[in-house]
Length: 165
Image (tube, rainbow, N blue to C red; front, top):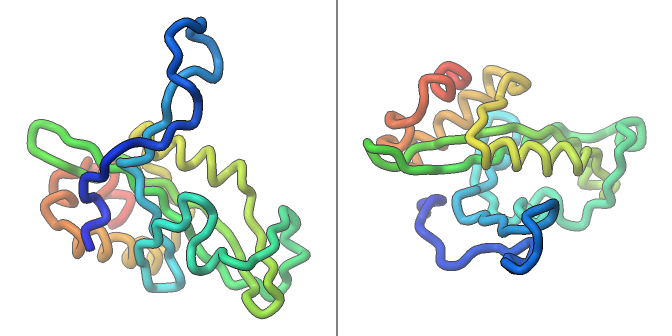
């Protein structure tokens, strides 16, 4: 499955009325160019459910912002990947990683939702923020991106490639 197939429509967050001033809260947020990747150890896979905090690892979990409440949590990374098109064609334009810990048995998890939302926004703004990933996690993400579409990876910025090397 190509995670970056063209999708129809957009996800409207706020009204696009033109009779309102151009201040805070006006406009549309289009998530069609954003995909979510879960990194579980040395494996990375696409899970579009993460766009609504309903990835396979997040379902049924009660979240906390206190790490001590999840002492047996397993680390996971959610990576927001944004695609765009330049003169040479499509490329991976933004990639940001968000940390979370999940204890499936206890059905408890740790994450900072505001951080996840902000990093999705950063990815959509074509930023690369992958420095917190380990070498193993970077290798898993790089492998997934290349296997998904090697031409898009080759067309991507040097910043992304350096962050994943």
